[in-house]
Length: 560
Image (cartoon, rainbow, N blue to C red; front, side, top):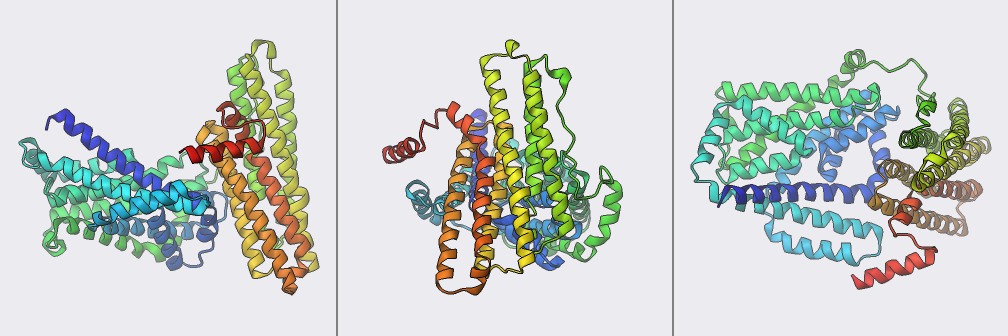
């Protein structure tokens, strides 16, 4: 095998592994992502928080993804520091246990996974079954990529240069540690890096000691990933990833020195070299859980390290200052960039207004609701500023495409303002009315409203991504989610009416409010999701009527 052929095959196997891990995570996020906020933010103690993190890491196949979720929730005040750090420490262990599961000999499952996953993904019209197919296919691709990796490394196991490299990594554990950290950070997946290390140790390509150093380095690199990805968030949101890095990084360094300088490896070694690597990885992350009782004591030093940006109250949005710059008006490209940033800021304010709606719907707080209603003024002011800014833009110096982009951003700003009005003038007053009347939602009704609200919030996050990226595939996904929201609202309405016909008193008392909340949340979702239409139209994915679009999609499915 030539060196070029080896590098190409190694890169192919590695990229397939990364893609497969991402495919599983994407499928799970699309199917169940709207429920993650409720699951993470309702933990009551360190043990349950760590258990939640463990399960989420196994599901998402990434402790870094869980850390990002926690950072977002901590930044909005929905999750405290101690609870958030407990979730992340549990996620670290969950990621390690996932390595154990994926290291089993499961190649016999690959044909079955491909058949079932492919059938669900290609043939199913149900959204969750389609995403289940995506997840199953992703797992199959992970197993295939690991087989490719073994087949790539086997021919060079007895080559002249591999033993020297392996011996160097075994003797210079610091370099191996740094390489492991850099690989995990560069690939943004410690799961992929550690699976590679386990595979290389299993086939004898590298010694166990080199593998241990690489794996410990990957633990450090994995803790760096959420720090890098949250660099643009508030200091409060970044405290949990930094604390996790300090705990995991210092622990990895300490264990690196222990296993390389003290005679402890004979007590850690098992009959199978690859299993030894996994055992050390799992044991290390289990030991990190010893920090759970002390998580709350880390909050004060982290608050000093990362102080809040301002002393404003939590109920005052930090996004209320306009980012429009009149000095950029003479340069159309800069003016459009400023305009998009202002619309993005406007969307974030609307999102911050909508996030606590279900909490207030279930337990009304007059002061908190009043603060949220006051934010609507910032949304209205932003729309006025956007209209003025677009009017002042030199249209004669702008191309046809630039003028069209300015109009599209203005139209989306109008939609966001309408969404903000619905939250401030309808949803929050409905929460107040429910409290005054003492009406209670049935258990099933509460679950349905919570599911609709979670879907609405997830779609707001997706709409932000679409606004920033102008990505056609993301726009298609947003439209699918908008249609799914309509189906969800219709399903909840039918279930509610069925409960009424069965004589449920709670459903009867809260019927008007339940149906109105469903309708308004669907309308808010429609306004926020409207950002996808110009992108789909430009990409030739949106025809003149929705009926034609549906027929075209059905026809393409048949042809496929």
